[in-house]
Amino acid sequence: MKNIDNLLKQALTPTDEPDIRLKQTLLSKAKEDYAMKRKKFKAAAVAASVAVALGIGSVSIYAARKFLLPEHVTQEINDSKLTAAFQSEDAITINESQTYGGYRVTLMGIVSGKAITEYEMTGNDGVRDDRTYAVVSIERSDQTPMPSTSDDSYGEQSFFTSFLIQGLNPALYNAFTFGGGYVEIEENGVLYRLTECDNIEIFADREIYMCVSDGWSYNSDAYSYDETSGVISRNETYDGLNALFTLSLDASKADPAAAEEYIKKIDNGTFDQTETEIELNGEEKEVSEFINKLTPENLNEYAVPIEDSKQTLTPDKDGVLSYEYNLENGTGGSGTVNLKDLFPDQIAGTCNISDASSEGTVESIVITTFTLNEDGTVTLLLYVPK
Image (cartoon, rainbow, N blue to C red; front, side, top):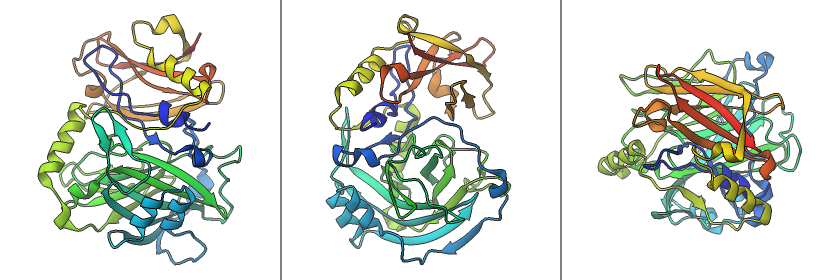
């Protein structure tokens, strides 16, 4: 799959036109020299094993020497700038491990700064070069090796990693809206994820967390959010992986004014789409061109609905829609989205194309749409190319 994940899983920026596209999908980024090591975004709903998930979670201090260091992970993806950043005094070494749902997760370290990577995120508003990076290792608690990135089974179990901010509802403010992305490698049965987002140091005067859970998006069942205090915590009754690390950042680096402006941009949908500048091959260009020409008005001209995917969604008290689907071909997906982001004008009958995924060919494209109903519910319906 090379680079197509980055293209297909990009956030789709809202516009003033009817085909408002959500800015809620992680960007996976990598250059050709390590593209095959990238995490493939497969919208597969994978249930955690109940037998394993019922095991009692634990927190411990990471001390094993078999693991790679953060700078070794960045060396593997040929990012010399980021390697230097993780070796600098600005890097924060954490090395805390938590075990839940059959997995042992270690938050190894984080670093923030401007222009500290070889592979910068760019968009219509220029380079987004002020970023935070974290390295997380994931291994099975029974020591069974994680699959290599070249194995067919790689990607069957998806993971979600994101910084979360005290006082911001994590269902709405997470890696999807923070310009997040990641790349993964496997070494000696351990999966290493280098995850990134816009610089979180502007929120350093608040409590900041790193969540690592099963699934490909934020799961409100895995974590709890106290609307009064803004505190985020683990749901102790969740049967699965829901690690949550609390970070200690230098509060003097906080910038409340910049943080407020950043939140406003997210709320107003004014962030330009970020993307990694990488060359697409011929097949990927065909997929890109097909997706880019789609609008709610011409969708039926190019695609047909998957009738068994149709479902009615009811927003919760915060206006958040949660959905999950499983198709007859074995693929599936799940996620959350805010009603006001989908339909800011609240016009019944409005249809939005929110996402498109692919296995690298036009024939494998799956298009996700939402339509606002008269009674305030929303209809989810998937399409595939004709």
